[in-house]
Amino acid sequence: MPKRLTKAQAEAIYAKLAEIRPDPRTELDYVNPFTLVVAVALSAQATDKGVNRATKALFTFADTPKKMLALGEEGLAEHIRTIGLWRNKAKNVIALSKILVEKHGGEVPHDRAALEALPGVGRKTANVVLAEAFGEETIAVDTHVFRVANRTGLAPGKTPDQVEAGLMKITPAAFRRGAHHWLILHGRYTCLARTPACARCAIRDLCLYCDKTDPSKPRPSKAAANARTNVSAASGAKAKKR
Ligand code: SF4
Image (cartoon, rainbow, N blue to C red; front, side, top):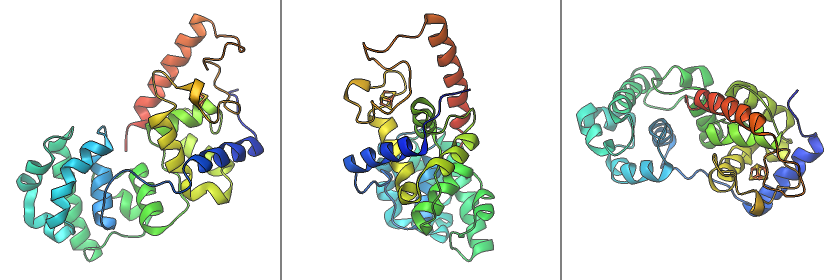
């Protein structure tokens, strides 16, 4: 059985993360729900900074599905060539813009099933849009959230869906709106994939990760550490699907 935090411990973790970042926000730039969908779809296997660089000019003239369709796949591709998988992403953004125009009156639907039916939009992107654009209490699980939830013991799970369900269960209502941002930012800047910065981590005393660089705690055997790395790598690969 994986180690799991209690509700009280989970609350203490969120309280600490909230103290550090009282007003957590996405680092992706967007100007409306449509550009949010596009930015999140473009961010698969790319950094938020790289996406922001590419969309800065793009969103000044292609900020609606109709305008994006007018730009066309080739025109869009010119703007996003610096982002990984740009060909496929250009195709998806044009296809989803067409669906938004034809089926949703040019608006982003406030509906999970309709969002997930859009090309290039999976559960993770739908969760981000539902939370950011419509204020719903969803917790999107990307590779950072997946790693932090597993390492800390907040919500151990083998798949992003399992982790999401665990987080929804253990996260107090007061912290649900910020949970995705706190966990993603903690994973991006402190609980790094290869070398977590445990020594300067604000939630170190609550975290259950047994590979923490703490001299007072026993180090795992090499075999155990290797096994853990393999499981984490396999699960992380699954988490990359958006
Ligand atoms: S103590 Fe280490 S493993 Fe635990 S959350 Fe902090 S950085 Fe991550």
